[in-house]
Length: 282
Image 1 (cartoon, rainbow, N blue to C red):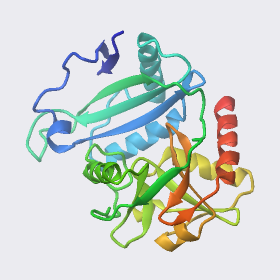
Image 2: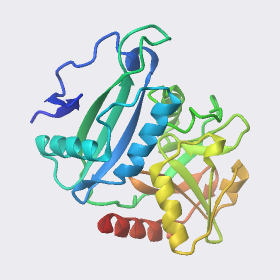
Image 3: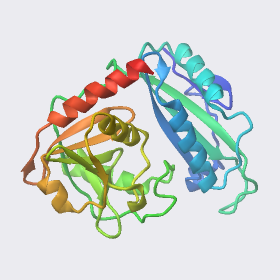
Image 4: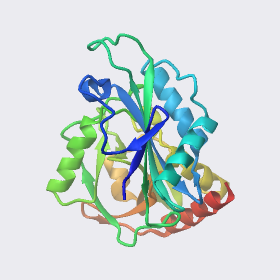
């Protein structure tokens, strides 16, 4: 069965070329993207994803596409979901790149977009049965600035951390900033739990401004769980009762091991139940 993509509003088979060698995303990483969970027959938290996309375009000084709106993306996502025969749950990627032209300095700041859609087997968010084994990646560190919080296609540090993860047979790697503060994992934000209180890195420390991160903070606060956004050092992770990672595709993943420390998952279980309740009520 063929898979289809949407490039600038035109649906075509995914194995047909639509990008060329002078594409700025390919040449310079001059692009950004959003990964969106499709569940309960809708793209989840689309408004928040679109807002982050627009914020990222502003940071990269891209010209706003005249058609970009929540209704526009919802329509195009639904059309692609149907074309690809995806049922209730799927994974969507929206990529925006600056149009061809120029070298480092672009000819203009107009953009194009690409939407991909793939099925997911899980219905709703499912907590991982086996906890993740993670460790700290330190060869390269992120520098906190406006670029650090957006989902840029310039992802070299995450690629290098992914290679380290594979080489050391880990499930995930934790990244730090140039001050040594723990900030995030390769594709997730990170939360530590101590005595029923949540701790997570502030965006100002250089983590991606995750949509699921915000949702988990909101859910926790609505359920009278205290949340502190503070700079986190390695000793906070080693002293925690629980660690878990969050992103919009998998929701919450609990960590069983970081170095010699072992963790429980009681809070993760409670929060993922509340997350699924939120999805059903959207």
